[in-house]
Length: 322
Image 1 (cartoon, rainbow, N blue to C red):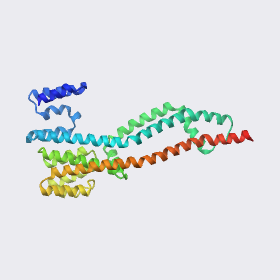
Image 2 (spheres, rainbow, N blue to C red; image 1 turned 90 degrees about the vertical axis):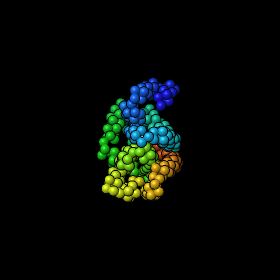
Image 3 (cartoon, rainbow, N blue to C red; image 1 turned 45 degrees about the horizontal axis):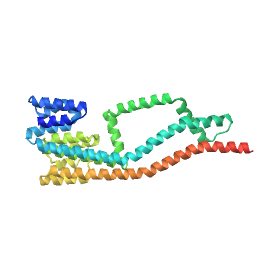
C-alpha cells in the first residue's frame, strides 16, 4: 500500500497533491489505518469516501470497496463531462450574447442617442427604453459591477442557508426537464453510495444516511430520515421506501425486489446505471430544446436593437426629405 501511494505521488505533477499523498503515506507508514490517514484530508476526499474506507477496513473488504469507489468516481466524472458537453453550446451562446449586448449598450447605442437628441427627434417607446438602458450601462458601469458582485455574495450566502436551499430544491424539482435531471442525478448518486456502503460492511442505517448526504438533495435526505425511522421500528427497506416521494416508483420497486432476493447492492448498481442513462438522455434533450429557444431569443434582441436605431433614423430621413 505504501509503495503504491509513493508511486502515485511520484507521478503527480501538482505540488498540493504531492504533499497530500506524502502525508497519507507517512501516516500509514507510522502505523495509522488508511481511514485515519485520510481523515485530515476529509475535505479533499469527501466524507462518504472516508467513512466507507473506515467501514471497509473493519470488515476486511478494503480492496473490493476501493474498486467500487474508483468505479463510482469514474462514472460520476464521465456523467459530469457528458452533461457539460451537452450544455456547452447554450452556455457559449449566452456568453457571447451577453458580451455583444454589453458592447452595443455601452458603445454603439450612446452615439446614436446623442445624434437623435441633437436633432430633437421624438423617439418611439422602444428607442427610449433601449437608450435609457444604454445610458445606465455606459454611465454607471462601475455601480453595476459593484451591484453584481454584491448580489453574487448575497446569493452565495443565501445558498448556504438550509431553509433557502430547501426552497430552491423544491422549485428546481418542479421544473419540467431540469427537475428530472436533478432527480436522476440524485437517485443515481444515492444508489451508488448506498450499494458501496452495504458492500463495505456499514450498517444499513449508516449507509442510508451517508447516501442521503451524498445526494445533496434536501428532499431526498428527508425521505431517507423517514426510511431510517421505519427500519429502526423493525420494518424493511422496502417498507421505508414506500414513504419516499422523491425516489421514483421504478427505483423503489427494483430496490424492493433486490432486498427480497438478497441482492440489494447489485440491484442498486442497476438502478444507478439506469438513471445515469436517463440523465444523459434528458440532458441531450434539454440541449436540443434550448437551441431553437436561444435562436428565437437572439433574434428578438437583434430585432429590438435594430428597431431602436432604425425607427428614429427613418423619422430623421423623412424630415430631411420633407
